[in-house]
Length: 115
Image 1 (cartoon, rainbow, N blue to C red):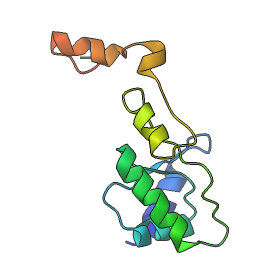
Image 2 (image 1 turned 180 degrees about the horizontal axis):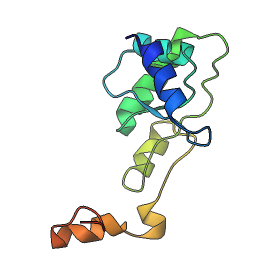
Image 3 (image 1 turned 90 degrees about the vertical axis):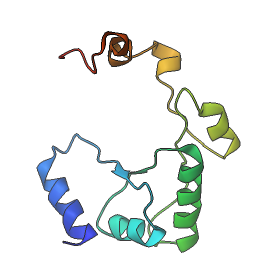
Image 4 (image 1 turned 30 degrees about the horizontal axis):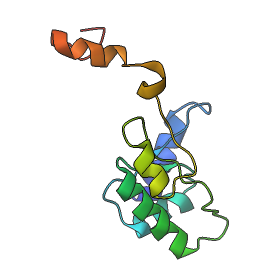
């Protein structure tokens, strides 16, 4: 199956109110372009520096109809680096709300509240 086929299949399996953020870790700009051509609008990376590199590569391809005007990266532990790298949006969580319940369970050898 192609990238486009995979995206279309996933898109039919999730409700419209769910945003699919494609995890593009280690993928080439050409692979990401194929995904965008299939209709994907939200692309994600795990690390700030990789996100910036991917953002720049996609922007350099100049895909018709795709505007690269928002660079969203930077969680609680990396938001300052994200801003230095050019992020226009950050996503802090833990720094605002405190540790997640699953993080608190680690000391009890639990990975989530259902364990």
